[in-house]
Length: 446
Ligand SMILES: NC(=O)N[C@@H](CC(=O)O)C(=O)O
Ligand SMILES: [Zn+2]
Ligand SMILES: [Zn+2]
Image (cartoon, rainbow, N blue to C red; front, side, top):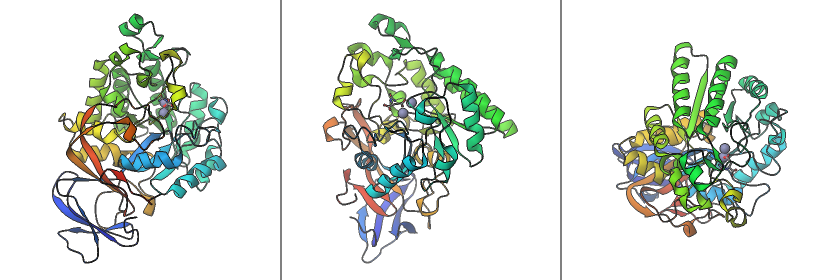
């Protein structure tokens, strides 16, 4: 383990892609920033590397408890560290569902025991994700796990009355409801790809963008009505972005509502025409969309309409994924490749600078998840003296060809396999301790 008690000196990193400086990490915090030479410190050569605050993923499926053959809190934490993350929000659609304080504390404790990233459990909105009765929202919030984000992800909270009650409830403790926006009456139970010309040609039951958009529209109005916080998970259409852009412009006027949203790396780059080969690796919910939607998502991430990039890392065992397209499980891996995809699409594409990447992959997600003010467990901080030493070193010019078999995840449903991307995570530090160094997980950090 790299000097958890000792000192680490990061030499010559470009802070948020700007000026180069040395960073001294001592006892879990950034102790000094400047031109430094420190006797007895472990030195990390960061010449040419960009330093970002540790990445925060608002949307990770860790599969424990229940599907430890696909991922565990430990293996998912390793994948997160390799991907530059220092905190992840673990979705509630496990078995059993994270719908009680005890269940949330179990996930929280597994995360602390792994000790590689801060694992923050997401609480279910409704018992068993059934969409009917509210789960123990208050008890989860007051538990040791300090749950602030609630989601039935995998399922939409489709009953407007239930959504309204949930928003009213979480408002009391500054919680947020993260909505998987998909109206079940517009997206039938067999839908498995974007509804359009191609779904007709392929003979696959499609689900239309409007199934997402009507829920986004309803929920931003519920956010206004309740004065509570709605976060839209994995927005995938130009129409959703339009609704959020409108809601944010209105919210600026009266300050009464708070709407945020996230986009996944795959919806920023992959399009629905990948489905022509019926490869279930590309089967995901919400589905890959046409290029016009992808363009709108990129523009919205650049202009701040979309607040965050979140992976929706969704590991699946081979026997659940390797089926005929209609029968395969929904979801794809994302933690290890997210930064490289964002670097390729947004930075190389001239749409965001590195300060912008820090905003959408660390600062904004930390704020949305309520992790900005948690003392030594705080994330998304500026790289300044006294801040917790959660940081990521990125090599902006590294050229990587993704190899799914090099993954530390237990699953192999990797849609990026064989693709070349520009920009890669070099190292990750959690409270001053390297969890990933030279693109490798640090042995013993678990
Ligand atoms: N994204 C997916 O396609 N699948 C997710 C569920 C979800 O995020 O809706 C999963 O849990 O596998
Ligand atoms: Zn979802
Ligand atoms: Zn998800």
